[in-house]
Image (cartoon, rainbow, N blue to C red):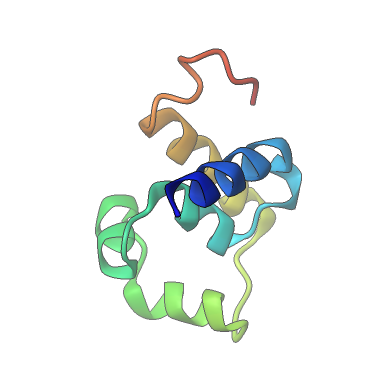
Length: 81
């Protein structure tokens, strides 16, 4: 299973502009509650985004994407953003 997660993680990195909130959260491996706490997103808002009831603006997705990649050291490892 770890190989499968690693493969999908690499696929996510290659498809940066296709990211959605699920992809971004998947990179962190955090639960909904932990993701919300770490990135200061209300839990209800995240749930609405994930269920498709509301959509975050693209700028917010881009900023979250950048922050997650920064937090997990991906930018420092030479992975282009």
